[in-house]
Image (cartoon, rainbow, N blue to C red; front, side, top):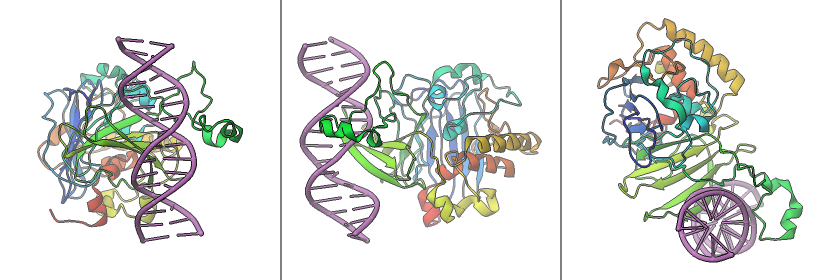
Amino acid sequence: MYTIQYIQNPYMEKRDTGVTLKTTENSMANSTFIAEEMPTSFALSISAAAAASAAVAAPSPPPPPPTTTTTSNSIFDMIPCDIGDQKGFLDLLDINQDFAPSLFDWFQAGPILPPQQPLPSPASSALPESSEVLNNPATPNSSSISSSSNEAGNDGQASKGGDEEEQDQDKTKKQLKPKKKNQKRQREPRFAFMTKSEVDHLDDGYRWRKYGQKAVKNSPYPRSYYRCTSAGCGVKKRVERSSDDPSIVVTTYEGQHTHPSPITTRGNIGILTDSTGFGAVSSPFLIPQAQFHQQLQQQQQAYMYSSSPTLNITTNSSFPPSSFSSSLLGETPQFTPSQSSWLRDHGLLQDIVPSQMRKEPKEE
DNA sequence: CGCTTTTGACCGGCGC
DNA sequence: GCGCCGGTCAAAAGCG
């Protein structure tokens, strides 16, 4: 099972506000995504075993303990992490804050549609500024984010290609990009989650190339930096093991993929597909925004009519499927077709599914 | 041979 | 201004 929690400051502490996504599947694990400042916490549970069922937790009640004990191998066991940034998760995502960001939103990191059905849940107001999501599940690969910093990151770097001349100048400058000083580089939306895993680098369906590794202060474990290998795709991710709990891996994603997941392409995601409808998975990263919006709208409508919504996202953002309701905590959550597709489209399930499941279905 | 990982150097931001 | 730290670069090594 995966437990996903949304925490405001994942890193430092798991806050109340959190969403927990729990999935219990064969080999699934628990992950918790935490988004900063998420007003309410919600939990989502998915039981993969059943085939893609998921439930979302309800909003208000005190957030469940972040630590779940499951094990899985994919990213999807998330645990709350903290992303260093102070910025709100929404900011990072570039999401309209009016709509409370949801975990899903986060995943998709894309623009969100206006809520068609305002959720009753109050949490919304709170979302103001958090920006990162963490999850603390206990599964195979989890990681937490720490986006804090200032990141000077580089997204902005255009550098490389940019001017070769610069390179000539100095090697010293090699990496420099003429960034404008005043202009801090804009950070791409980031999303972090923690997963309990023995493997540091989780298989999330995309291909990554490691471009750096740094020792982390106050932690015996190094942080690894990965970049999506697809041409033109600037998505990056950081992976580090929690010093508090070595079994937990914190993964932070930054940016949006501009291409489909190799896995998807290959049809690896099958797991949930067929029966569950997770099939044609397209993670949020994969979908062009315009298209994504359309899908969302359609999906939203679908949700509205969904007869048995099991998941509920409590943020004010109605966005994601309002149908996700928290009804099923603890039990095997089930996704309605529309829900499934929603998750799928947003990359939730896809991302959440442990690689194991995708690759080698286990029994657990 | 091509791609990925390793690893030391370097840069920019931030705090003191 | 200086030092620390996070993040990135790129050459070299490793691997299939």
